Amino acid sequence: MNEVASISRTSHVNIVTLLGFCFERSKRALIYEFMPHGSLDKFIYSQGSNNQSRRLEWKTLYDIALGIARGLEYLHQGCNTRILHFDIKPHNILLDKNFCPKISDFGLSKLCERKESIISMACARGTVGYIAPEVFCRNFGGVSYKSDVYSYGMMVLEMVGGRKNIDVGVSQTSEVYFPSWIYEHIDQSMNLNLKRVIAEEEEEITRKLIIVSLWCIQYDPCDRPSMTKVLEMLQGSLQSLVIPPKPFVSSLLRSPEINE
Image (cartoon, rainbow, N blue to C red):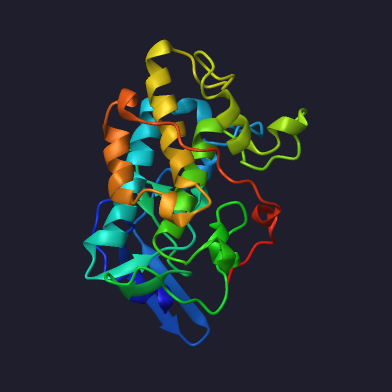
């Protein structure tokens, strides 16, 4: 019911289209448009023998990041009632036959008036690794649309790295938390040891995605850009981007998964 209440208010190329539903006794289902390529997570993680991530060029990854940003900006600014998604992650981004991304799964979303900057929440919601610090600890600030911005930044960093941001399986302890590792290496030349960067012309796209993502995951919500600003940064020149302060790393980021 929460998903229908949220998504019925939307109409955007980067938001999945709800076609219908079934509500008959114990049979309850939502029917969406078919997404031939499934979810984004299949195309960005390098583990497994069926890895398909190498089929996506950097330009495609950039277009996907741009499309998701447009969808989020629409949810935050384009609807009469602002919609906060609260569960932005690769699994909830669906890809059509042209790899156009569409935000899905509004089960944890929350509606609020556009004039409201801070909202109240009875409990935290989201998925480990993508939850903004303020969502589970109010000492970090108030919960707002900036919480979705944080999740977006963490997701795009995973798109860049081709791995989970927190990976206990890597050989070097310093590489366990990818956002910290990439921040320390952002000024290094060319490919930053990212396996999928294979051409010099792709470096600008890579660095742009990294810098924008690092701004999005600033621990203070006030330091994060709006999705309108994110779009401006993504579509602007790399030379105009300023490297942000190092994102705050907290053990709270490893809190258990919360899906309520």
